[in-house]
Image (cartoon, rainbow, N blue to C red; front, side):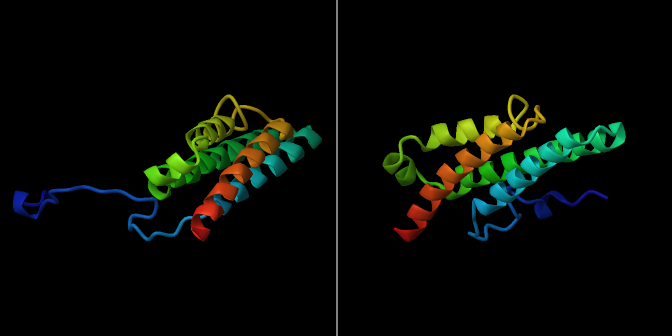
Length: 134
């Protein structure tokens, strides 16, 4: 059944949790990235094809979650004043999301790629917490 036009929302908005709650923390991305690294290490140590297939699937899901959590921070938390004060912030987010993507941890089972991702997330985290102190 379709709603009458008068009951349809005139503006559609979205947020990371469907309610602009204002709760942000790079730890969400870091935890998923730590999972990626652990999965990559287990993948390397195991030769069972079924295990390895499951590991790759789960690793790719975690990589998508890392990208999601980073994008939420990038687009919802950080404001123009932050980007002015930290001119490398856009670059950090771009590099981190690429490291989570197909050319990085999502497309590789190398724990070193996950370690690179964790390092980028840590750089973002340091800036995030500096902005929270301000």
